[in-house]
Length: 291
Image 1 (cartoon, rainbow, N blue to C red):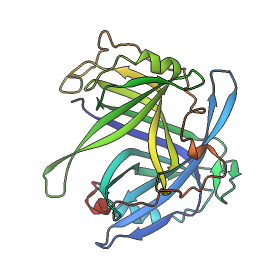
Image 2: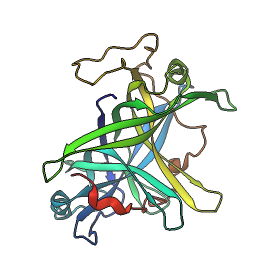
Image 3: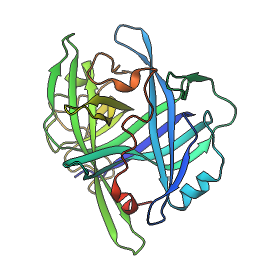
């Protein structure tokens, strides 16, 4: 499998006062919601402002240090981190999972940023940065479909590998399962990818919210791709460079922005979004996360 790459960069305002809490085992957890707006130019040439609200967390001693810094709602911050997948058995039965941002670095920006107040009483930065860069292997063959309006949509499942050495010196490994959405020209260009192919994905982090058949509010975190590069089989297994694989070497233009309006489940794009909706389901294996 490809050597994983997993980077998230967020610039935004704290939508509310952050929280420092402790698990039953005494692990410190610092949590904050970073909010801003993506300015997207659609295929029709019109600019759209798409709000984003992303929960970020930090664990251990770094979390306690962040909790002492006195952050408040509206503070502009930079977050550097990675996407983390966790799954657990739900009390009501069945499996539940979540993808969230594990923060490695949180820094307050100098000066004040222009803020927008949303209908839920929170604030977001009128601008910001929302970038994701991941490398992994496809978990299934992608299937191209079209919306009623004729827009091409391609959904990818990505397995991103992580390895680290724990406190006892033992090597540990974990796979993060990330969903990726491609739109229009980019979707059609990458439709020949196949299960197992290694790819690099650049895009933005987005949340989708919906109500399930039992009336429960659910949410998921995905990556909306703006560029995809197909890597050669065996990329990242010792070679220092990855070359495009033939014939699947088509990529999206780096200047191409894939607007996400018009699809299903665009829950976080309303100014009336409850920024906590579906984001409080903390998995029980939190104590086992590497940091």
